[in-house]
Image (cartoon, rainbow, N blue to C red; front, side, top):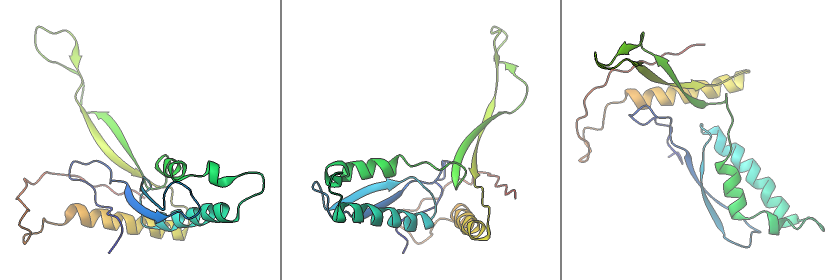
Length: 171
């Protein structure tokens, strides 16, 4: 099974960060790091693995004057991973648009009330066949997650009201 879920929560929020646990040999503070990777897509686990391999090599091989074990700690690696952002690559953005012209809330109020609707938008600049394939796989997983009926055999599943939702794909 996958180490994370790309399923979108029912409330329309972006998918959760991917929980990751890995060994970080050479650090003085901990043996394992538990962190949330904010980047979406299973391929990001491979990318993180490459980065951790480089960090591990720096810690194990060292440098005579840079003292990597003092500056590269489990905390600094965790902070770096959690603060990673890559806008435009499987990134979610909330867009707020007006529904229609402002209306007055009541005759006694003079300030118009603007009704708005929030949309969750997935942006990805897939620019070659490999990235297009990755995007297609991610979107397919997302669509399966939001269209799949709740497990009927699960004792904890309760019927939830069907909410209308619109999914638009633009290429």
